[in-house]
Length: 484
Image (cartoon, rainbow, N blue to C red; front, side, top):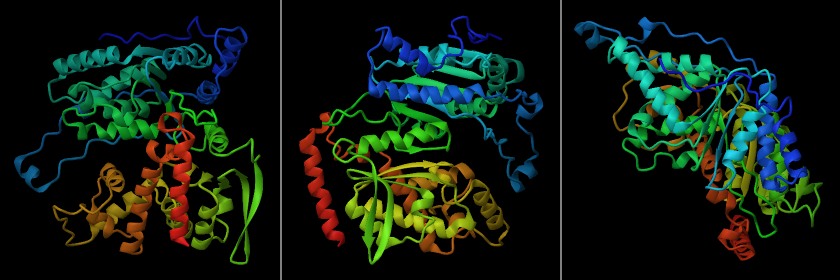
């Protein structure tokens, strides 16, 4: 079976130096010009480097060959029993979150990948860097050989993924893309299987994950792969848009999980970008609302920064949030936990805050312990609700159920094998109104995380500079007046 070109501890590895040390050296020697936007990206590389210093990949266990053959059932069994579900792939909780670096030609993708790969810590003794096109060619060759040996119905993806994982605990792709339907059909399962064996993925691309395989055949089958990339890798924009004050926008998106080393600097970067340190240095503030004092721990310009405990665990409510949105046009909330049924009151309060921010058209930056889709209930609770619902007698699911369910919620439910009817009749929510508020909050968070929402009114040069910012401020003023 052909092997992917890989290496152990490379001779090019620059000792114990991390990406930030190497970057500083190149700046000091004149090989690179210091750039704050690029430095922010290098810091993301450094965070992963530090996580990898302590990372021990699990032993790779190949799946049993027999389990990958299709299970045969009699005709009668096929009539009265559902086919067994394909074995689920579980990704280790301690797996470091990888990186997805995207940008136009000339944005420095190759240099950044060189710097990351060549400074990988010495404990990473198996690593691979390969062009993504060559990787997929090799993958299809391996899959073909397995099927020739075991038959066309043999599920070769898990076995080949285990082979690759045994060769590399860190896998770096240059120029990730998907232009072929054959690639699109296997990519999610392949990447998920690699992660389940503890492989850390780092990749460069010309496109944001949402723009991969656009207009491709059966693209809907590729969407789960896009969601996997966005949830399991930090997506970082290498292009350097600046506002009219020449402050570089942080390279990552506004939402960050988990609460790892990189989360600590995530809030700081966005606070510096959204605030106005020159005219209004960071400070605490007090807002007087209905005869009470609401403390804003950190503020600058139009941005307010709270931890989750400072904003949500305190006795605050809708009136407080509405008043805050009249004073500030951006909010940073850090340290958000995953909320289960035991924290239902906190979840309701946080949803109320999200609604206030959304309706005021303000910006929102978050760091959380879990993905957005698990903020208000855990995957275990979803599974428990599904099992409880299935035990209820006479539960039928109409073919058209789900038409009124938000796409974000539906994506989560599809991933868990649920449908709209199951959700509505589960014991997760106390009623239709609460289930609607949950789905709406996810939808609004999804919209507020879009590039269009984040960049609107920031005065970015490509959007019109300061004139665009001033025009948006007038629009927001009308929103404030309407809410009074």
